[in-house]
Amino acid sequence: VGKGHPLQDVAYALTTSLDAELLDEMDYFVDSYTCCLEMALANKKNMDIDIKEMRLEYDLIWLDYVRVIVTGLWKNLDPERMKRYQNTVGPSMINRSFDHVKFITKRAHHLLFENRDIADKLRLIEIEMD
Image (cartoon, rainbow, N blue to C red; front, side, top):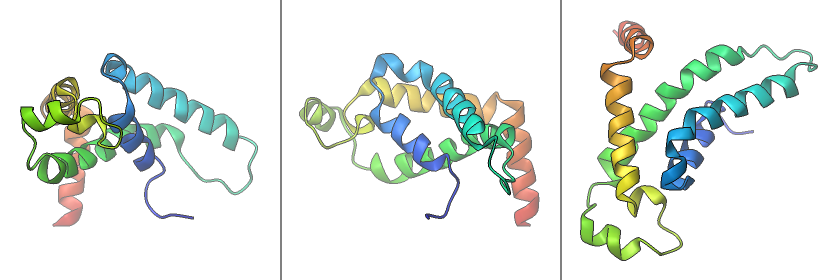
């Protein structure tokens, strides 16, 4: 059993694999996943998981993955490289689709500067770290 948040793999898979026209449906896919998870765990004993809180944490997990993308994976990203990898199997969509670059930056901006719940959670995390 791996360690880490259960939605880390979901954030990675959706961000790197969705076709551009499906990116705006990311929240729908996450909501569907957590709903199915909740149903699957409903009859399990000793499962102390708050699915609603887990869903709220997804945006923070996604932002952490975006930190990895921006500071590492996009370090050498340029239009020529994106075009070269556009139809290649292997490099994830975040490295070969300008629509993914736009989606990631717009969603990150929204979460960091326009989403009150995320701002409050980030403030709590900052307080805990002090």
